[in-house]
Amino acid sequence: MPLLRRVLAAWLLFAATPAALAQAPGGPPPAASPHGAAANTPPAGPRGADARRAELDRAFDALRTAPDEGGATLVEGRIRQLWSSAATPSVALLMNRGMRNMQAQLPAEALEDFDAALTLAPEFTEAWLLRAQAHSRAGDPLAAARDLQEVLRLEPRHWLALLSLSALQDEAGDAAAALRSFQAALAINPKMPNGANRLRDLRRKAEGDAL
Image (cartoon, rainbow, N blue to C red):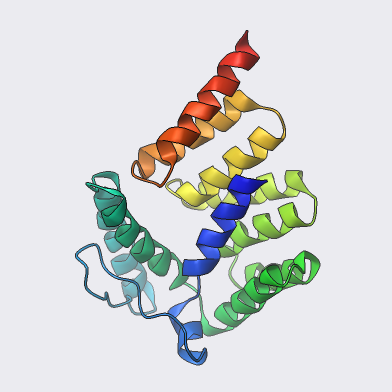
């Protein structure tokens, strides 16, 4: 499932939370803001959540209008950082452990970690997303699709969830649904790498199925 693996690899590259990064020697620097400078993470609490939502709205506007792939990549990193920053330190530890298990090809152990994270934070979209990836790795695409639908219920602009859903639908032979999901992702992030080529391939498959 090449596309799904690429989505997972991209998420794992950017997903670690600021709290977890502070505990990880050699972790990457804070993600750049849409203007190219390191951005501060909104504080915890209701006021911080409001600030996070407001910045996400601005970032998604910037993502949709990014002039090129390079600009879009900067904005993507900031959006992922904002999503991840919603985690408490306990949830961050579970997420990091789950990601390590995913990288070690241990999806069953990763599922336990993401289950625990969701018990603590049932509205944390990134735990739903990675649990979907773990379900897929464990050979349960239906459970993966259910988790991706939950991501999209919580955050309809989550283009990574739409890409993963498109990959699952393509693997299941539903090219029309895969095309719709990919088009929805492309509307949110028009400058994603290889987007035009993937769109063309899915259109060809969908048109072939319609004949």
